Each structure stands twice: as structure tokens, then as C-alpha cells.
Image 1: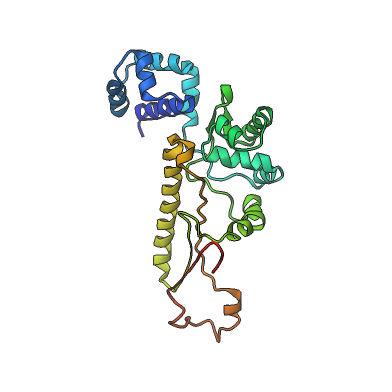
Image 2 (image 1 turned 120 degrees about the vertical axis):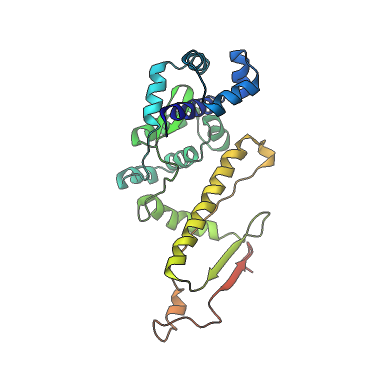
Length: 264
């Protein structure tokens, strides 16, 4: 990616962090909104215009240079020690997950039982742990890659398995927009990798839709949690009934099981 594209990307990110729309930027610059959109789409921006945008953002070129440097590839996972620090404090873990969902400071305070001082302290700790870079006015920038994931056998996933998963599956999955499926079957080794790629894209699509819908009024959206998993596995009681390690009976393969929220 060229440096000019990097610059435009960083400016877009800074506008988003500041909560400044193209329409608001256009007013501040004395331009039509269509001109601002075209300017960012084409990446055609002289230094004087960049300077004007920085003034609107209350940034100087040093800040912009640091943001450009920080825009390089980010970490894909935390260390076990960093994850342990998160699970040791439920409010810190919640703040981390909220930041990974790109909620604003105001959204987090309005949704959960934090005082402003408590949340500022959590964000400062997340900054020290390398999850975010804390900015003025309680804004932040993520310091993890968009493909970031918790360590598969790390402290956070262990916490999810013991605390989150039982609570999640205790529901009946019969509410609006809810469902639970268990699909079991035998497929070729190469196809397993392809299905994993599709599932990864599904998770990414869900995350992108979450970001796109942040602009909706609160009464037009509700929280959902998507759990995606795929492993070579057979339910324990069924394993005990196997004659050998041979193929499963045809009647079991490709069976679809669907439950509602009360497990009927």
C-alpha cells in the first residue's frame, strides 16, 4: 500500500475517532460535502489541505506521523500474561471487549456500570497492556490487528469456556433473530479448510455489520453474540458406542439438529 493511501486511511480513522463526519468536515473547510468525499476517494490532497484537516482534528503533523507509524501491522494476539491481567478483573475484560467492538467511551459508560473515573482507569490499563493507544478526551486507537483473536488455549478462552459458554447455551435460542444448529458429518480434509475459511468470513461479516450499525438509534438495534466453531469431534457417549475408528453410520452423517431457546 502506498504512503498516500496510508495517509488517507489514517485521516479517515482520525475523523472517525473524533466523531467528525464528511458533512461536518466540509463545513469546517468551506467545501461541498461531495468535494470532500471525492478528495478522500481519489486521495488527491495537497499539503495545505492536509494541514487544514489536521487543524479541524486538533492534530499536528507530529501526531499524524505517529498515527502513520502506528498504522503498520498490529499484533494478532496478546501474551498469556496480558490475557491473565484481563481475566483477573471482569470490568477490565469488559472494557477490552467493548474497545475491540469499537464502542466509544460514552457508549460504554451509558451501557455498563462504570463511573467515568473507573472507565478511564480501565482504558489506561488497556493502554499499558498494549490493547489500545489512549488519546485525549478519552478517545482511543486499537493496537491489535483486525484479525486479532484470543489465544485458543489462553486465559481468556479458558474464562469463556467456564463462565461464558454455559450461560450462553442456557438460553433457548427461540427469540427474534436467534437459532442454534448442530451439523455433524464427514468431509474431506481439504474441504475442512475451505469451510473454516467460510466460517471466518461469516464472523468478519458480522463484525463489519456491527460497526456499520453503530450509527443506528438504540431502539433500532439489539445485542447478539455469534459463536462459531468447527472441530473433528464426536460426542463422548457416542464415542463409547463405536465399534472401531471406522466411519460413522450413514444415518448419523450430515444430520442437522436445531434447538429453540428452551431446548425443545
